[in-house]
Image (cartoon, rainbow, N blue to C red; front, side, top):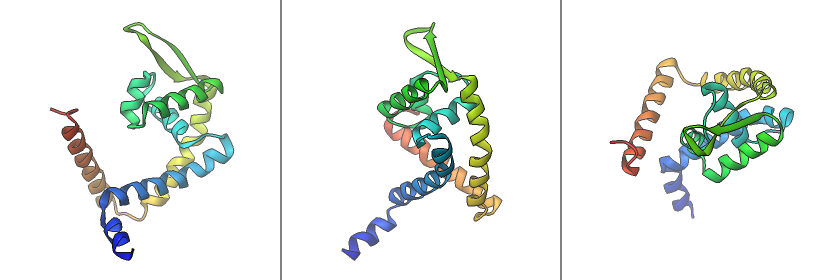
Length: 152
């Protein structure tokens, strides 16, 4: 069994997932307990807070979350009055979603804490290491999208 764990611990996709989960879990601790948001809900709010109005399809592409998870998170945020929607004039089947005033106020309260936790975590890396990590992650995401056929 130790042999299997060694192979798995050397498998970089596994290590990326574990690290991502650990970082997300640490950051989500505050906004979950204080605001009752789950990680997918916060991700939707964070993207909308940063990018402005988007469709659910745009949110799926931006977060790489499953369509069902995005739909569920958007529904919950809508029920709480944190996200509003209006028909997409360019496509009658979809809607534009955006943060309501209450959603923006919550986002503005959460973001500084999320950023502070991020800064604490990434203090373990030098600025050069952080830049390298960003570049490497970008390369890996491009490779995945190329394999999937999303990038020419």
